[in-house]
Image 1: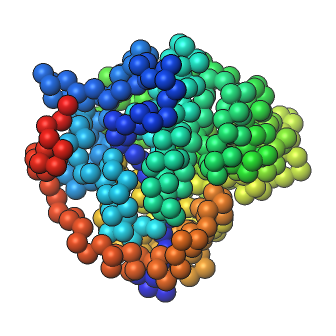
Image 2 (image 1 turned 60 degrees about the horizontal axis):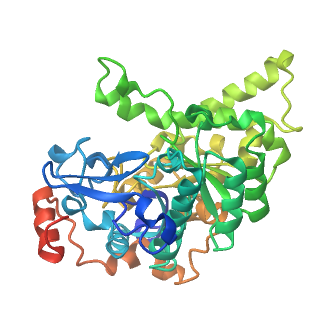
Amino acid sequence: MKMEEMVLISADDHIIEPPNVFENHIPERWASRAPRLHFDASTGMQNWVWEAGAAITPFICAVVTLPPDEWGYDPSTLAEMRPGCWDSTQRVRDMDANGILASMCFPSFAGMGGQFLAECDDRELAYACLQAYNDWHIDEWAASHPGRFIPLAISPIWDPELAAKEVHRIARKGVTAITFSEAPESFGYPSIHTGAWDPLFAACCDEEVTLVIHIASSKTLNPAEQPHVPVEVSSTLPCWNGLAGAANLLWCKSLLKYPDLKIMLSESGTSWIPGFLDRMERQFQVQKWVGSDLGGLTPTEMWQRHFMACFICDPSGLLLRDRIGTDHIAYEVDYPHSDCTFPGSPEELWEHFELAGCDRTEIDKITHGNAARFLRFDPFAQRTREESTVGALRRNATDVDLRTRSKADYKKSYEEEYGPIA
């Protein structure tokens, strides 16, 4: 197998939302109270505002093709970033240039688990906005290019019954994945150990909808908020939030009730999993006094029944793939965040496949097969495998400009096409 023959699905990318998210989907009675993208001409800053507060998109979340000296946590504007961050047509062009067949995209201003929408005291308004966001994502972003996006809905993390209702609603629209928080109790909502979220888990099983949990979807301790902690620490540690979330889920009694529940851990990486499973097995086998009950399964078997882990760059995880299970690893690009591999994703991934000695069957599983199975997505429904490969997609995108460009360059191009940002 050659690098150009790979078929790549990115199980984790991100949308920097354009201003028309709620325009066509929010009921008229709520339209004046929905979040809106606001530009402050006096500061040059742009953020989403509504009665529940404000949300910014820092440049660190939209840095593709920007020079590294312009990266940072200062708020970004749509005009100063690559159009593929917020325009679905340009995103597909960038996917072609990077050899990516399909992408599942997480929200930005709404929060990885929808926590920004959950901050509204008026729960009826919050749910109306959440439904409108989901409908925009499904009917406009994902539907704009059939076969290129895997729709991902946001769940109302403040109400388990409402979350179950939303699963049933989005399933009728053909959606097979919905977000959840890695620690809902960190927001003051019920813990998964209380059984309160069983309605959501049951709905996901009934509709065959995968529960997708992204790092930074909770209020767990942020090292950056502690004194004297360098940015390298806060930039490195969030991936391991997946470990705590996985431990809570693996020992959660609700998983015994819902053996068909599928859980995808996004941007968590994979190299920690062998040690995690070793510790889970020792806990299970040695700490007998606890009386752990996994329904006749071992921790490793529970992992294999429920979980899929996603990685951006994790060569150690590939070396340890047999311990993780090659059926439980999926690839992601993380476009347009600072950790993403665009536009050289295939080259980096192929180098690590060669280092690990992966064969064609393993490569097919990790690059697209596992994600497609978990998300019930047919990668070849719109085109043949031969038309879906890295090489074929890139041949269609030789005119895509991949040069490093400054914020000022992007802003100039934006204003030439759309006029001054407002």
